[in-house]
Image 1 (cartoon, one colour):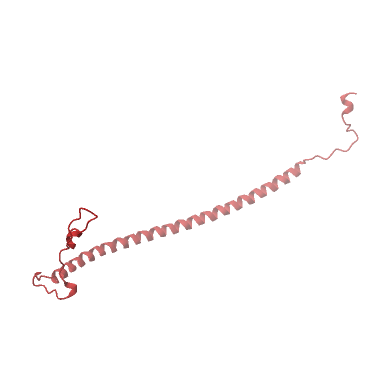
Image 2: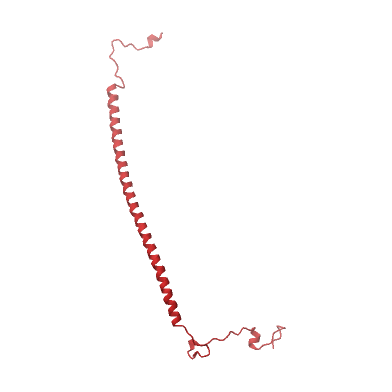
Amino acid sequence: MSIADLLPVRIGHARPARKHRAIDEVDRLAQLLGGANALIRGLQLQVADRDALLADTRAKQAEAEELVVQLQADVDDLTAERDELRAEVTAYRAAAANANRITVPPMVRDTSDPADQATAPIDVRPLWDALGVRAVTDPGRIR
C-alpha cells in the first residue's frame, strides 16, 4: 500500500465547507471594532466625569484656601487688638492697685475683725520641749 492509496479522492465530490470564510471574519472583526469603539466612548465619558470632578474639587480647594487666608488675617487682627487691650487693662489695674493700696502701718492697723488677725510665728521646737518633757535617754523610763 502506498501513500497515494491513503489520500482521499476529491474527484466528483462536493467541495467541503471551509471553517473560516473571509466574509465571516470581516463580520466578526466589525463586531469587535464596534465593541471596542463603545468601550472607548465609555472610557472617554468616565475621563470627562473625572475631569469635571477634579475641576470642581480644585475650585473648592481654592475657596477653602482663600477662606483660610481670610481667617488667618482675622486672627492676626484680633491678636493685635487683644495685646493692645491687655496693655491698656494692665495700666488700669496698676493704677487701681496704687489707688487702693493699704498704707496703714502694722502697729496702727485694726485687727478686731477675726479675718484680719495678725499671725504669730509658728512655734517650731521638738515635741518634748513643747510638752515640757525632758529628752528620753532610756525608753523604759519616762519621767
